[in-house]
Length: 166
Image (tube, rainbow, N blue to C red; front, side):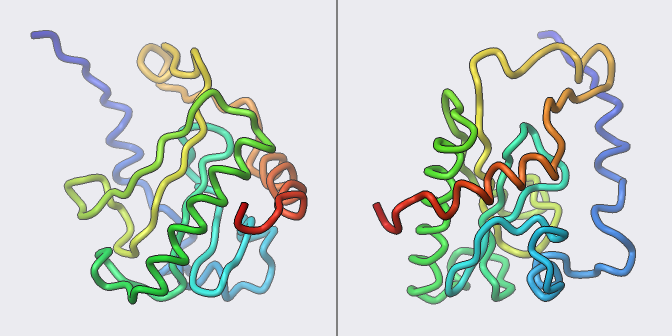
C-alpha cells in the first residue's frame, strides 16, 4: 500500500475559517445585509446558497438553512424540503452558469466527517473532466481559474434566468 503525504493540509485544518469577529458565520453572513460581500447567491424562505470561501472548484456552493442546527433531524419538515429545493436550484444554477460535466453533492456530518462548522450545510461542487490535477500534491497549490467575486457575478446573473421550480 502506498501513502500520499499531504502535509500542507494541516495548515488548512488549523487555519481560522472566517475573520475573528465572525463566530457563527452561517448565521452571521445572512445578517450582513450585503449578499454580494457575503457571497450569498440566493435566499429562500428557510435557507440560502453561498459560495464556499475555501472552494474545491470555482462555483463550489453551500446550501445552508437559516436556522442553526447540527443534524438533518434537527430541521423541521418544511425546512428540509426548502433546503432540498435550494440544493436542486444550486445544481440548476451551476449547470446554467458554469456548464460543469458533473456535480458532487454532499453533507459532512460531524467533525470526523469533515464538518468544520457546526451548522448543517450541503456542498454542491461543480466538476469538469480533468479538473483534479497534480498541483495540490506536488506544489501545495490549489488552482482555481476564477475568483470568488467573478464566480458570484456569474451565478447571480443566472439566478433570475431560471424558471422557479422547473
